[in-house]
Amino acid sequence: MPNIFQKTQIVNGPKTAVFHFYIRADGIEGEINRIIIDPAVDFAADTIAGQPVSLAIHALSWAASSAKGSSFAGLLQFDGVNPYNVVALSPTANMANLDFQDLGGLKDRSDFGGNGKLKLTTFEFLLNNMQAHLVLKVKKYYKPLSLNAFGTIGAAQGTAL
Image (cartoon, rainbow, N blue to C red; front, top):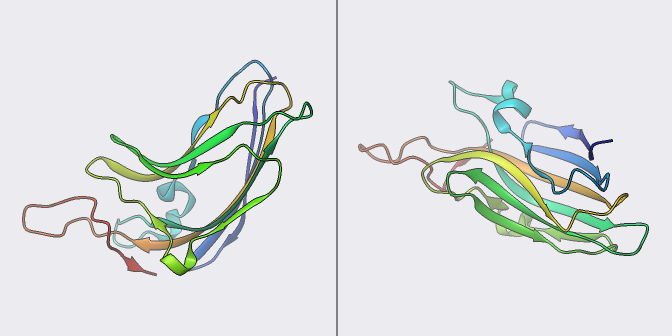
């Protein structure tokens, strides 16, 4: 049986979205290294003039454990040629709640080659029945495709929806 990866979109409003992810190891397949939110797919209806939505992580909750008491860690990154590390998820069985709303959220600040996709990578996700819950609240905004006449791509600023 392969690792279980369940994704549920709880809310998809005009300005925010909330996702719940459940993962469980099968003891064979190994680490998870996958795109968990792709704005071009998950928010295709929100595209304006061919420009997809960009994300800012406003809040997250994370808990990871196994029946044997051991745990594993994770890393959230904005994907691209040079992935941008956003949040390290510590190996804890207690629910960790992080809120970045007062800071405006954690935006995709990847350089050239960033694609806006959010990726989850696990570490030490090896034992059968290791499991985790991840809840993400994201803010939607539009990232300028170009800031100057030379076409600088991937600017950090954006216009909120």
